[in-house]
Length: 437
Image (cartoon, rainbow, N blue to C red; front, side):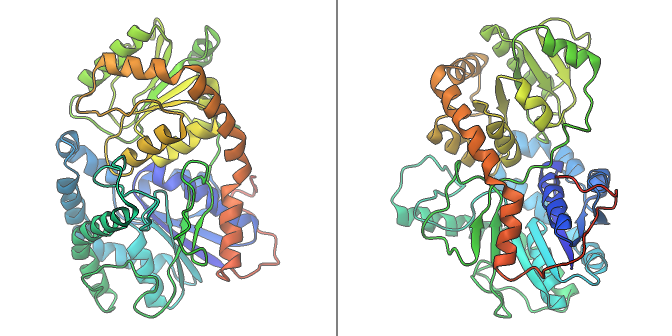
């Protein structure tokens, strides 16, 4: 059966769906991922079908980095909503084209309500997939304002409802445009959070994170919600490091990794200087990944104990380092935990604060840091504490547990158990002719 996945955002948002898509293809399904053209080579390189959804969150974040720098998430939400209003009419046309002949739609992030509405318009099944806990629970604190607050369980649920209501306030404007384009009735003021949609169809939800990091609470309905484990798209067998990187790794003890993925800062030179000062205080070697622009290569000659790279696949690099300092994105948290690494989190936005809190709770990230009040001395202390025996041992103990979850297979088994996948008898191949495992 044809399955279309909508994921709109950064490469970190798209990569897990390549893994899921490959798993679905191995079971005989035809998979197409609808996302930004920026990710086309990633999708096609994974042997899957690609459909364009006109958006570029990299450009959006570049233009709005001043808002991000101030940590004003409400204002950033409005900026994203305004961009979605501009994109929505085209998204609808592209999404309808992508889903011709589809029998199942999966949506995530900004593609969630788009995917759900397209599926409703076509009369086919829809599944939501997310990388952070968004379902209210007495045992899971809200992502906002501060997951570390010790509150009664009923307040956890109440604040999550408030947070979802605020998200809906931003999203209701572009969604109204989308629903009008599709000739669908508007979604009410409470938002799209009920257990069934307006047509009475059950809303299914896959959470692609590890139960060893955030267990599934007892008050989540298990007949429509599942925590499957993370979905890893591995490239370690196909990616080749530079000779200089290999030489640096071989020249001494396993270095610290520092990288902030798709995050950006208004003053990357200043932030990088702080990072380098902290590393000097620890006396440790480090690999620094500049990513989308949070950091800047201040040592182009690559001499000394610091080695700069643009990026590298986490599944290749993380087993070769001793510690990961990063922003706390769900994908990076999963990859570092899978590699058995203690971690230091410097969160920028959204769910990163939640994962920073969870890693402290489970014992692999001893200190919670704030980017606003960060100093080289605080970061050096956090690195020192994260490399003591207790967090190292705890991180090492999680490695086999994360591997054993087999998140992709668990997700597909769940979809089959929910009756959303038709059993295929043919032996599918990916468009590359290779069937990776």
